[in-house]
Length: 424
Image 1 (cartoon, rainbow, N blue to C red):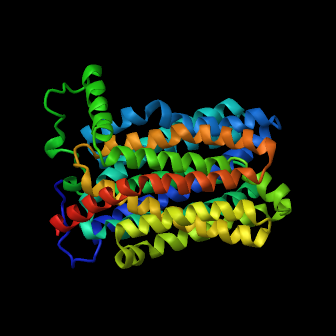
Image 2 (image 1 turned 60 degrees about the horizontal axis):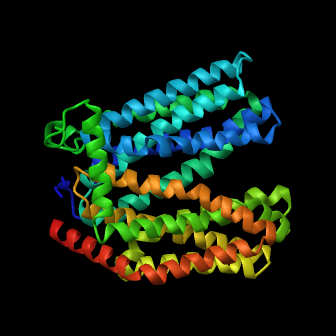
Image 3 (image 1 turned 120 degrees about the vertical axis):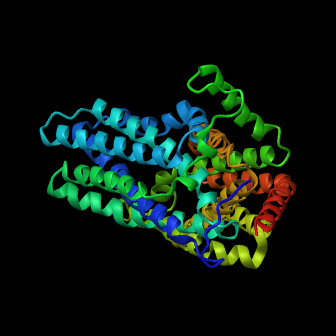
């Protein structure tokens, strides 16, 4: 794949990445505020658990409905412009909700509409950003850049956006929404400065040969090409399915986490948020350490250790009914998951041509999100039998899948190593 390499010293990520990262941090801050304040507004409007839980449906539905289509357009159009437009639309939608809340005209259906709109924009924004990254930094800096993005996301969403939303909500329910909208708009303004050379999927933004722009047949053909790129590749196919299976196993545990923490481990309600924060601390540590770890162990061993730790931490969670041990396991799991995701995404960015990267990333995301609800349902069913069985089953599935897919991971990371070496 063709990569625009910055002229700064080899280990520098460059000023274009700094601008890209700054815009992403503002968007992440807005995400953290929104994902915290919308459930709070929903609880203000209704105490019906079904209606409140509908926000989660609205949050993930866009990936399932539009993820593959988004991948096509990300590979066709100016990726920087997609991100800017997505942020402006998100800012407008949240600003409109702020007005409705301030005037007492908000409804649960308005919350659904805003969540769906914002997350639809998120689909296009995230795929564009991931597809653009290889053109922003040298191949040797992909892990570092991805780690910095993940670390920044953790800090701004979990440690800044969420508590800020709670503090502002106490002052006025509409206030965090207004700040949220402003952060999206400011993030869009920052991204306007990205150079055209790193924003285009193809020189001049031409569609694939034979594709007529705007024709649904061409869109479907490009979507099929993205799917074929994944499912006919002997390296990508098993690793994408492996990642989806690991995500499904993790979601089985995450879906009943509140019950595991409060009923199985005996953590008081007031400390549940503190328990959850341990994962964010681990994720932040993982984002900082992923570069040194990968340099020391190599991509393949890093993936083996990371996925192995994930499986073991799930087992510890279920086999050792101690809140302190479980919190430590949850923190290590957050770090291991972050490291494994950064290396996996970086490997895909190295081996997939830039003209297909948006579609390949969309296939990976859609498969992962598509199996997540299945994992949650299976975890709930098993949890009815015995809560502690769920993390044990999750850990066993992750470790078994790792053993069966170790060869595919080796081939994936070897190809990524070769691509990085070829890129210099």
